[in-house]
Image 1 (cartoon, rainbow, N blue to C red):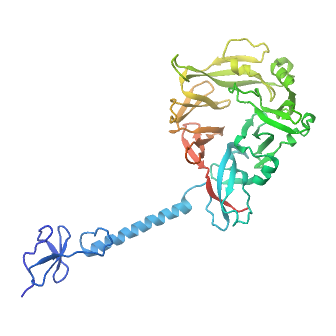
Image 2: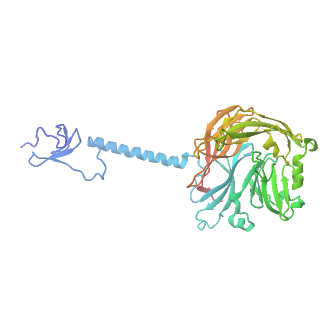
Length: 463
């Protein structure tokens, strides 16, 4: 008896169209179901598969199915290999690609990040609290402590990475309040300084890529400071910081170990008593022996938008022209009252005038100013989630561009070259470490680029 039955219908969908796989084995062309004839050549059974590992079987011809499967695995394998190569070679990272034999794993908590210039090029200085992983197995060749370094933002290259002081040595000399450090650039001295409570002064030397403890040497020729430093803080050189108790000027308010307070100005290497400091603030230009410079400074005048406003949201940019006492005491009154018509008795004030109309912006401040540009930072609303906005104006107050960073960012340490404005941008995180970036904005268009991210967990070369 012939075993070929016509028509044979699929037990699943009823289609008569099929492919004969074996003597009594068929696959439906419509739904892909495999079925076979019983020995009576009449009864039709569905063929079940239990060896597919839980994956849906690919429908269609067996050879085509196998080919598709092979292609899929080849594609997946290629993608995985590509991603692996990218992870190894493709991205700029603040952590170099190092083997376990020549590297150490560390955790960094950054205490300061500021831009400096090395050989005429912008680079960034950092100071970090560094913890080494598995120091026992590393035979303690590297010490936990405070490290500093310099980064080239264009290439991501670490120009220097050095130990400032180990934890053990820091405890021995009392240099432990790094969480309270302050850092400022003194324009007349052309130097960055760091103060660490209560008696330490550090100097950043960008040319030699070093950080020096100058607490003793800075006053080496000052007999009044021979007893040593008891406390030190910056005299405010941020002229809008009217609440400063130290005063105004580019220097330090320092107390020696005899409880005597002085004011020191590195640019002129002068040490003032409190009385002499206050007297020098009021000296007219005619009595400053030519040690003055015709200078221009820009400040923001702020006010509430209405009587019902809870915060100042209207701003106006002012230009103040005055005789600057080079590197020595200044009178905060210029900056407190410069936008009024109150006459000055010492003749240092030359002129003051508003150069813009009122414009809106909360938490506004001037991040940077020079003879060509003024960079203003503000928020569009009082919301904690309001993005940081940066606006560049020329020194006539004309807006050149405005750029929103799309999220709240803390801006610090601004510098510029001929092409870009460079700055540190910090994203505050409540549950994880803050994220620190080197960012830039082009002077011409205001194009934003995050050039470099400081890693908190990464590998460094063994030293």
